[in-house]
Length: 342
Image (tube, rainbow, N blue to C red; front, side):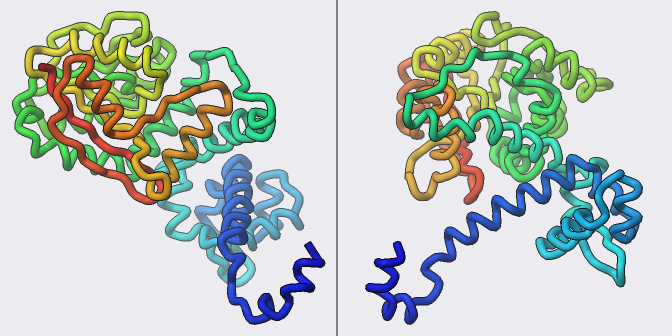
């Protein structure tokens, strides 16, 4: 490396910032560790009122010197504000890192950390030896996972989905809906809010229904919960539309089997409304490409498809694709595919 630097020193001296993408990547990783540690230790909750590092360390039973260093780092990142010798939450932290905020992202951050520890750390091993087969456990879909999905939804995808559906005539006429894998129930609540004639059944695993769903839908007369495994159990029938958000990431054979089950559960002319990542452009859809790589590490195989291939699967299972809406941004590449039962 040093020999190459020596040979190209003139060019290097005149260059300007060729290395900045790598440094930004490094800073993003460092920032994530700082934020996730602060969240884990309760630092954000404690700094809703100003405190100096010594007081904060005493309350949280932390090392005073390290606590001050962390507060400085979080201030530099915009999550804390320093007032004289005290620190207090910035507006960004109050919005996204306090658990009483409707935009709280703490469980999503914890899920991202867990994903790093259980999947990404094995990437090098998988590249050498092939995918690391892991026994599928339903306890992966625990309370934290469900809350993380809710937190992801409220930061854009829920709002964008509602804007697409509320102008859809079939949605406004619908009387009965199935929210497939709807765990946190936020989509179901929003659907019944904008369609006063709609009733919704949320279908999810028994542990999710018992721990999360029933609490969210408590008091709602138009939302019911149905526990089961959609790969094995019947979904019910008589639905005007079935909504599936981020649950159809599965190999082709399993996906087609579930699509046929979905079709049989719909009324004639009923809709499947699918909201998922799709890989249509490797550069623009980098978030989806990385998501696909994450699945592959633990033997997930092909689970994320292009919009055209997913549409082909739908058509082979008795649907006609009516409309595709891109609701993505640079960090979330979701598309809504609306397909009608033929």
